Length: 442
Image (tube, rainbow, N blue to C red; front, top):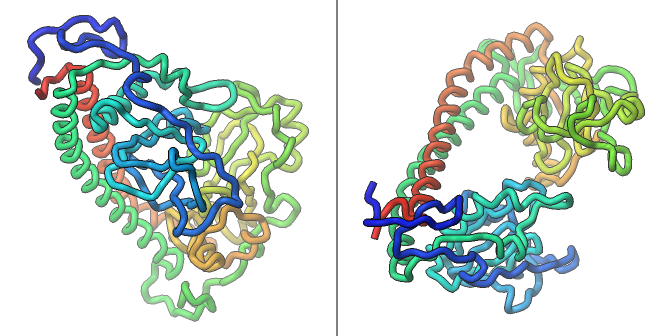
């Protein structure tokens, strides 16, 4: 790795030594930082309006237009220009605060109230790489008792390497080329993951809609998008496979039930969407004390074998609660399901319900909303969904078959995802080395 002829101590811990002809400055003097547009639901319009860039529009340090909101108008001074850097400045997750994207082309857009615009006075592309690196080392300042945020006051505390103008342009061009090469390698691995996951889903969907006996006689399921199913299978609503009783399906506590009662390191766990999405019931630190648990456990206690379903945001996800979990209750925004275990086993239900495993339930939700997944579910909708019910012994055979068929795919997916992580780490390492002068590219 090529280095500069001589170095000096920057006096800033995260920067370390810098080339002798570089200086140290403050981020706030490299440009202007402006807060975004506050708007209401009444201001929202169709695609003919002005795009409002939000946190979801920044993916992998690039602008993403899959989740868009438009408003009728926005002040001229809040419209986005080429060369601007759009930043997530407020978020429930501290890890997402500071993520940013460079505006490469002219777009008709503004940015939301939880966002910030950095309009650099230095080389715009260099400023983008410099900002990405700087914020990684100041993330500890983003978390407060109310909300995780990047403020003007925090920006004023950030020190950066101050690089001569000509070198900024050369460094930016080098990083554009190097990062572009790495991004292509990442895209190749991401495509591989996508295809492997699609193949995995196809295997599972075929197994839970047609079974694993290719010679089984078929019948019309009565559901257009499912088609034919083995003739000895039952086709019914989810409500018909639930355990009898009031606890067969339950929506998590809302309103004041948990307000002010959730803490950390208390005796009883609160299980929520974070456990469902990651299929990890050790995740999350939300807990309640014994008094709150006893108050809510009659209606909201969860036990092994229960199935938690996400009802807000990540629709179509579920997870079976395993044996040996910490005693606890369910959070809001989830639905608890208890199956009649003489009709269906939880592992089979998970394969047929979870959108990342098969498309049986997810397709139904899309059909119900004309292709657009709703913002939330409720117990009535869930109970009305159609489900296919093989005999119990066949369910167990199908689960074993799926596990054996997908094991190799899972290893390939894990390997590709690990390669993506390594490439992303390499990319950030190169950026950091170059913008702090550890690697010479001039």
